Every structure is written in C-alpha cells, then in structure tokens.
Length: 165
Length: 184
Image 1 (cartoon, chains in turn yellow, red):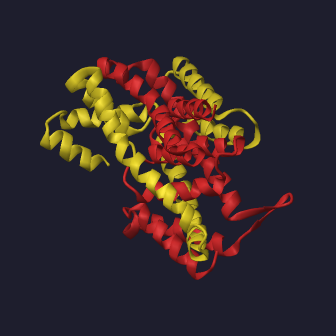
Image 2 (tube, rainbow over the protein chains, first blue to last red):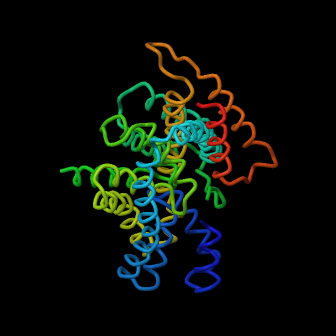
C-alpha cells in the first residue's frame, strides 16, 4: 500500500512531501483506523478541506467495497465443492500462522519496557478469561499508560519508523 | 434494525482498533461470538481473501461482513461506519497535525494501548487456533496433527531470511495446496 501511495501522492501529484508521508504513517499508528483512510482524509483535507476529505476517503474505500461484494457473492457458489473446502481448511491454518506472526511483530514494536509486558499479558489474559469487553480493555490500557508516564521518571519514547504495510 | 446494529458495531470497531487493519481482527473475532452474523471459520476465510485482494484488510472485512449480513446496503453501511471515526479524527488531526503527534498526553495514552492491542491480537490468534488446530473436544483440546504441523511449518518458514519479505498470498497459496493434498 505505502509504496503506491508514495508514487502517486508524493512523486506524481506533489500533494504531500516524503516527510509528511512518514509523519502520517507515524500518526496512523496512534489514531484509530486504517492507514490508507487516514492518509486519504488528511491529503483530501489539505487540498480541498472537508469536500476533499470526503472524496479522497470514498475513493480509497470504493475498490475494496466493489471487489469484496463480488467475491462474497461468488464464494457462496463455490464453497460447496469439496476441493474448495479443503483449500479453505488449509488456508485457515495459514491465516492462523500469520496471525501469530502479526501478534509477535506488534508485540515487539509496542512493548518498550516492563509495564509494556504486563499490559500485553494483561490484555491477553483479560480477553481470554474474562467477559470484559475488548473496548474496555483498550480504554483501561490507555488510562494505565497515561498514569504510568505521569508518575514515572522515564519519558515514553516515540518510534518514527515502526509499523507494517 | 440490522443496519443500525451493523453501523453501531463497526463504528465501535473503527473507533477502538488502533494501529491499522490487523487491530480490527480481535474485535471481529469477539463480534463473531456475540452475534450470529458470521462464524469464526468464515472470518478466517475472509482474512485470507482480504490478504489476497487489493485494499486495506479492515475495510475488506467490514464490507464482507456487511454483505453477508445484509447485502449490498449492509456492505456500504458497515464500511462507512468503520471508516467514520478515523475520518472525523483525521480531520481534526489535519488541523493540528504536528501538535497532536508530539503531544505528551497522547503519547502516554498510546504507550499503554499499543502493548494491550498486541495482547488482543494474540488473543485473536488463540481463538483461531482453537477452531483450526486444537479442536475443542468436550473440555479438552485435541490437536489436528496435520494442521498443527502445517501451522508450525509456516511459522518457521516465515521467519527464514529467504521468505521474510514474502507476500501473505504466498502463505495462503501454500495453505490451499496443502489443504487439498492432505484433505484437511
């Protein structure tokens, strides 16, 4: 995703600079939502304010919406075949492995100290063994993060080049 | 009513899934257990499809769930609901761009959220393992040996230097071929 964004928005149309691109990336890591949407909204706003944001965001989500609707419609017909079912059983296992890998990567990037480890383990345990809603876990973690850095001498570090595609 | 519920659930996911598309997965997993819009199996198929089609994974998931739940209008509603929080927040951020990122409070809050979200993703991985590799059998978990070997093999392969940069679609292809050969 990112290389293409760079080619179109930085090199072709000069909507943003390379530095802005990096900042946008960093900021997307710490705002809710998907990077592509964040970038589109930001660039749209810069060029044409609210109308620009709306057009750019609709533009970035349209292809996915169309493609996925088609796939979802087709999938229903093909899923009956045994060969497709076996293929998807294998694919699920592959997805499983990818998810574990993602969890490891995200943990490596997000955990900077002991309290990070505790929050990581705590988040996992609360999600696994208690009926606490995930949203609440995220909120609690945010509060803990805030309180910890308020009352500890070490300052939280920013990491500019973290992130995945 | 379904439309409203779709909007509500996906707006919530969009608001709390911090750090890109993969962060939506634990929330979608959770949703699968709370409402009967889709099963965990379907969600996994969807993750695979999202990884092999263009477009951000979070959006693909919202579209797919919306579509299977309430057709094309559902797809559009779920997708817009997912995007809306990010959209509104980014409009604010665009005005205060640099101040926001350097803001101490924002940094502090996210230093707590990031590790917790990693924990949530691990939880999602565990939920998935429970339906694909360790099949629940009463109170105990019985591993499906072929699936377990495949899962471990892919995990190891992903960490080999030659395959580090491999596109997810490679692993999905490998999974599909092995699934067909071993009749998983």
